[in-house]
Image (cartoon, rainbow, N blue to C red; front, side, top):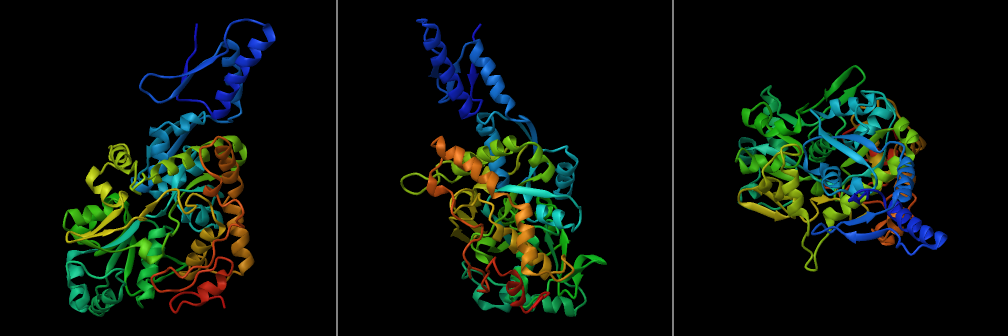
Length: 487
């Protein structure tokens, strides 16, 4: 009986098969050839046909993965792509993992199921592991060794609000207004609504989401106070000029159309859907609010990571491969695989939106309104620019925003920020996965920031030009006119 292994097993397993065949042949003097490796017809996948001893060795190798059968959660957004692609293209399987992926109802359910162990890990808002670990909301030690992407969000307003913004600023009264669009025109509109006793109601996806902080950043940069959180009031509306509430991502366009909210910040494809349905205008992307901002992460509990270290490394390897595949370009610099990714993501079990809607942002352009399509080459970044590396400075930026808006109620010193980041972000696991991929020839040394201390250089690439230096968090928070200050 011949056992065939196709499309599964780690690179180490293939090596074990080949070595065992050679050893068996040399050791017994037999003329029987060693285990062979050949391409399966039309598959592009190498298959191995080992003898029974080799199969036993493979089984032993599989045991080095403490938990090869896994279930991961995600929310229906295009930036779940690394998990979906790793599943669909067999990257998990190549690392010896049998993975089920499952859409979750909302971010809270997703987090709760990771904490309870119903999910092994999940596509998470970057703020979720941070908030859980410091005890804002649900308390649990959540960690990440993999950043899923850069950018990917935008802010959309209703057609009515856009018309009022155009009336407030004649530069916007154009089929192709100049970008980026700041919130100065919206401030005139927001002040009018507030004076009439009916403040604008804006949506975001979760209190510790990037979307919440990006929306707040954009508003505050134009002098619109988005409101504070306090230990006694978790709504985040104290002293606010507008109301900001939670709406699940897929419900954003319908909620906007119903008039319940007048604008929102969300990931794709839910901005593009509003534009294509002609119920909203996208005013700014998060790439314009903060160039190359970190967005989602792959999160697990600290207990899970400690219990299954080799499994964790294998998961990160598969996700890195997926990110690399998503960002591959041809000789002309065009994305090689994004159209295929859009087709996969459009399936009802994944994002479940039309391919054309997903492709608007995923393939290098962005539709702000029907008359205004702009090149947004880096709207989604999944691998280049060290997008997958868990930088401490990324974690610290989220902590500064939690402090700025009162989710962290008490003043903290710089040391606290650094220590907290190092308890949540796990670059050692990432680097181990990357080293194995480099040894296998999958990625290059230049793809990994191996010499980094975990902090990106200071940057002023924000819509308001403020400089962020992750090494100096309290000084960063202190420079803003609107927000809590510790200096």
